[in-house]
Image (cartoon, rainbow, N blue to C red):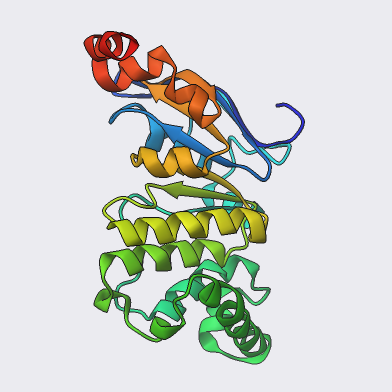
Length: 264
């Protein structure tokens, strides 16, 4: 793990039913960067996200976060250590309000715990009030969702639900934010807004971002570094313009015929 890296994976192997999903995957995410992970469908991107966030245990290899080996650490402990994640498929409590969903993201920071907060007594009551004020001041205003904070999530359009999920992750005050397809299914305006928020998360919140998405326009516009997976292996890394010009990357997306035509 080089100096300046917040996250590093080393030699990660994952297999499902004898099928190799990841093979000796080694990547680094520089502190304070927006780093993107790209590749064709089935390349292993979400599998690597699941390893980093603790949902999958690799057959081999290590995950190091902030200088600590977290390979065997449960996902909830990784969250408490400063690692937050959004999901490809929205994972919100649809019958709860926007504010209540966001507050759930901050439960790891409550000294009283979730149960006491639910009882709303003593320390929990004071923490609840302070937390609500903090979230309304910081997260909700930042993501421009104050007008929907009391609305039930199920009543919101898809793009706003994605923004609420991002807000819930930010409520954890993460050092590392994992974004799994943050602009998937969005229209142009929603995509541009989300890209702007991601840049602001880096610049104004000081968080490091590791992102997976298929929108190459967004990836190339806002990423500091890009890693490319294909068939579970790293095939390229570098700055966006460098990666975009790599013949191995072009071939992975277009096939060998497409790569030859591009080169010509």
